[in-house]
Image (cartoon, rainbow, N blue to C red; front, side, top):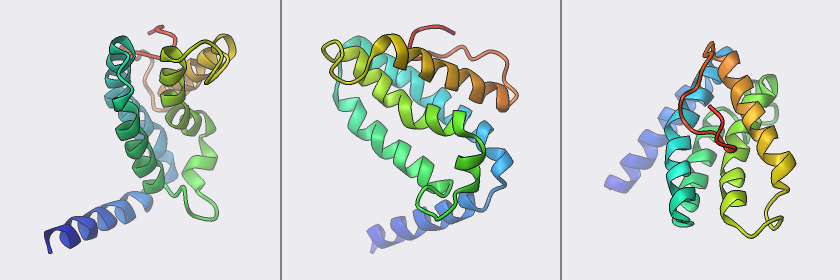
Length: 138
């Protein structure tokens, strides 16, 4: 019974968030990244692969709440830098703790993810983001 209530509450919260204006997505994505990037940076430092499965689940929940599984997710389509920053930061972390060139090409992928995070923060009205980024730049 409790499980059904939890799922019902999660469903209602997801539906409420999906109805938010698309213009709120950059701020929400930046907030999500501000919470997740320090955790991911710590996992990379500790070479802790366990963080990434939970992180992937949180990314999926977040993106689904913004319409990922809908025919035309307005927020995700309107702000590709934010969408890509959220969808790619975990890959960047895995790239950093995996053997070279097995997950990504670090010299091109990591700067791309960092640029998307910076762009998303700018779209959200943030000019400086003090938590970690995939290439370690502020």
